[in-house]
Length: 101
Length: 348
Length: 164
Image 1 (tube, rainbow over the protein chains, first blue to last red):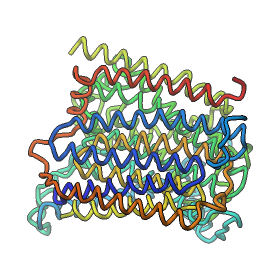
Image 2: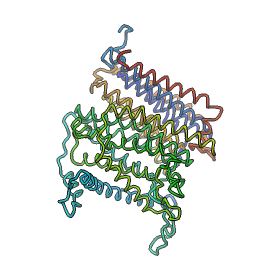
Image 3: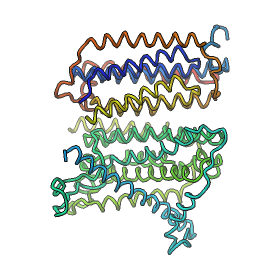
Image 4: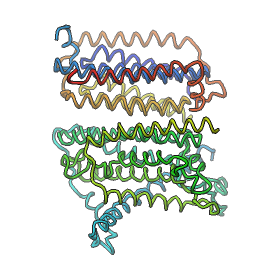
């Protein structure tokens, strides 16, 4: 392997930051969701890189579980978004600012 | 030449040969399908262009090449162009990791360079450790070509057709994957070459036989037919439904690419059935050795089976299709996995 | 050598399409950029010696979760130019500045630690990962995850139904 592991960690850091900035900047709920998925993937990359650096396979198992949890969260989250859209008919984050429906 | 460069060169040659052979088989299939279907329906099919209509694929190609390329006004430019590219790229990528015959030994000719004489070359472009998982992943990506095509055309029939078609595809993907788990357990490896070699011996060793993975074979036949949208699951492209489904707005080369992707997917399923369930390049008779031609015969039989299905069965309705995929095929495939796992644990 | 070129190429592609995710106006193009990011990450996983996780990333993330996202986006018919007024220019600049600050700070911490290359005998094949996954250490967590997925399945269907 001819590239230093550091660079994979930097890439993971860059992707994570882009995800965080995206959550701040975007107004559509589903786009915010996608930036959360981006953050989860950056973390997956960090886990795999560290797992390789240490020669232990635990990182891979953790990536497996992170993917599973991300899938479950995406399913439930999107179901909630569909229910929200049904009541308010918009997907703008700022529109859901009162508990009254 | 370093070993890496040698491998790269051999891989490039294999890719060139494979793409050309596939394109040839694709055009042959378009002609043969129309002829055989016609004979099954008591009519003649194309028999005017050239002797016995053999020049029909060439005529079709010329026609598609020269048609006008139209893009609808509100269409999303990037996605409209990218959709057929994604379809054809995934179709060709999936077919790159499947072996087509036993490894071939290049004879020591004089004009060949030193490193090439007597070298044993596998008949597969890339021999991945996780071969079947890779094929499954690429098939999962093929859904995007259809989703993008349906959405990008800015046409409600396209969108509905694209959504229906992709829902059908990923509904049957689950039982497709589950049907493979049984044979992976029996062979002990994800590599397709290993799975083929685990079926050596007589034809009773083939994975399609009742003693081995018969139910997985049936499930995979049905799921594979649904994956590539062939009759009886061809709701996406049925002429009487939703205009023409997701490829309503496509014409000329983009349409040709999408048709090519569909046929190559069908060829992939036929090749995979022959390799995974019908013994690949091994003959069924214990005395006769393995050869590339057994493989070709089995693939031809499978392709004829697909055309036969098209000529015989009516189309499923959409809700019947979804019910069947989720409520019938997945439980059958899951029970098959359970039974195989129990047998493997107890007996080995 | 080839590995380094491929790593930097896919890394660049991942970063570019991640910028595309947060910068595109149309959410469907955002989703398509995210799919490109996921596939390039899968290639990087393969380069880091984990073929199983690479295949799983494409099958689960790019092949299933993103299809779910795209379906919801298309069915809810999100309008194309929906971000008429995002946060005003000042807030955008502050967000990007804070992001850069974060990168610099954590990057400094990462750079301060040396990480050795992979020790020999690192085999992240499917067999070894599966051995570890079904061993006594992770078996309970694995079974709990399957209960989690069942709960998510029931929850998603219950939440999205029209008549509760």
